[in-house]
Length: 108
Image (cartoon, rainbow, N blue to C red; front, top):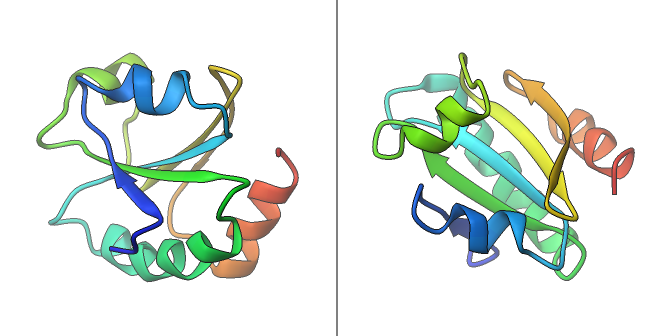
């Protein structure tokens, strides 16, 4: 995982995501999920491009069940973009780099 990607938990989600001064892209994932593993290098690739403009966070749904349940995560990977403490957009499924940057750019 890139040094630009942060691991978050149920316990620090509010601090790391909702109270972040930057917009935050949260990746809900699990180690057994093949599309999640395929998305990881895409997130690593874009993390440097958005450094200073966007925070990227990953939350393991097997180890952290409260936050995914609170946001209605039913499938993974699910990507949620938070800005100013609120959820602004959601994408479900594997995205290409082009699709992901388009999704991000349209909301930040």
